[in-house]
Length: 504
Image 1 (cartoon, rainbow, N blue to C red):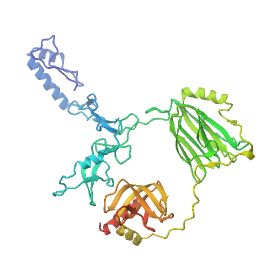
Image 2: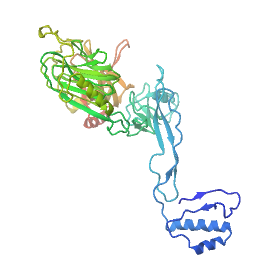
Image 3: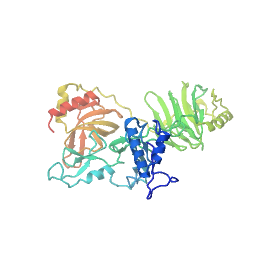
Image 4: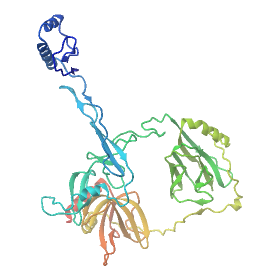
């Protein structure tokens, strides 16, 4: 209602502030005669009548307007972790009078706190929380177990722990705030929810950096430089495409041809594809940023870098055939655009219609050395088609005969001797006869395994455990013509139905 309370130890005089000083209400105020009537009463009765009149006015005709008000934010708590990443929290309280709506907004705010990296060999936070229950009776019996994290349960922010040597897990409630949602993930668990971090450092925040690198910005402090370099060139060799100046962000270059993109630093040294040597696809450090270089079988070649660059980079193309066009773009701070334009024109290029010049006079066509790749991929023999493994009977056969059924994402594939090894991330477990780690190796016989798994795809796998007679090898084996299907909601339903028919 807008009242101001003051506690007095003695009755106030007329020159003092009364015990309750009312703000004029929205309804009609008391008449002058009413004031004269109050003034003629002793002060305790005046205050009592004012309180009764106020309560009556609020109860019969008054209504609160809008929500309550928040108290100021409290101070940030200590970090939830002693090393690495953790969470700090602060809170506030909602103050509202009867009839007012609740305050708008959150009562708690969480932010990321970054501490020095944990020492090598430190126990992960989730492992430590599971280990707290080692040797304690659970599940209503006196049996005790040793517990390790289990990542196959639906809620990533529950403390799901697997009993070592057993095929069951138990949920001990929520994990502590600041626990990573999954191994290697950037998201953290807070109050039972898996939250991303905004650029303002607050967990669950939607604040994102704009293309200029400003948190919550609107891309108005930088400009987009976007061109297509179409010069075909009169000779084979290195041709300048564009200068990428210091401060550039979100760099992207792409083309599709037998030509090769080359990148040179301001020190005159090539970052990749220099000196007639083809570099491997991968990530390269260059002038304060990381450049991701890709080239696939379709001859599409790309360069990407988040930036910002600390020094200038020179983008070139090593021509072997007519240039079909090289698309490039990057974002540049407004104050850098003028000097960039002047520098490009000083080098003899038109900003809008690039006219490249040879940076180093190329050798005569007859003297051009052949490109020397750093690694020549071995010729691959064509693999015969895999046998047909469709049908309900085949699915049940492998589900029931397997030791593990799980959903996994293939991280990589490596051919070793007469076997193929897949590195997978286990995401959802339907059946397991022993504990599974978050990352596992799955082995398949031969250089042409059936079925063949593709990296960066998700599959539903039915695999067996294979232990060598001397106990030195313990592997997960995907049999030839085994069961591996691309994961989908329909495949998930089939798995749940099949597991019901197969005992653990």
